[in-house]
Amino acid sequence: MAAVAPGSGASREEEGTGGDATTPQPPAPTSAPGARLSRLPLARVKALVKADPDVTLAGQEAIFILARAAELFVETIAKDAYCCAQQGKRKTLQRRDLGRVSLR
Image (cartoon, rainbow, N blue to C red; front, side, top):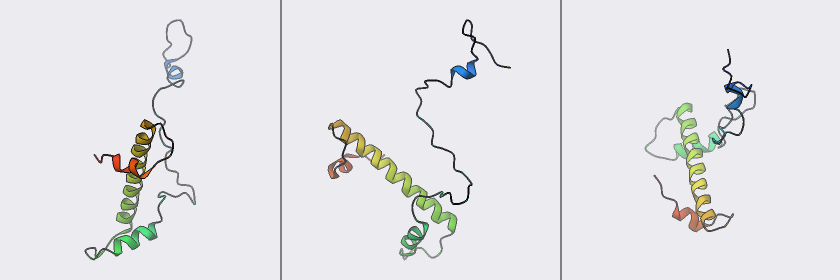
């Protein structure tokens, strides 16, 4: 049962779908064949992990989590650096923009 707003003739569910000022959510991961869950090559991440003399074993789940964490880190630092560039009225990132990013 849909609730109708007085005088509009539209349900409240329909009202919430238009012109929302919220940020768009990323698409949910798909289970389609060939869909990549990680944008970084897991073999390279595994090679980096194996290069650490303190690591003896690393499971596939751990490699995936490390790859995903690295992706999120790069994405966050790039967005923050881009904000610094925009404050300087530029669209191109420069090395100094990365230096201005504060790690929280």
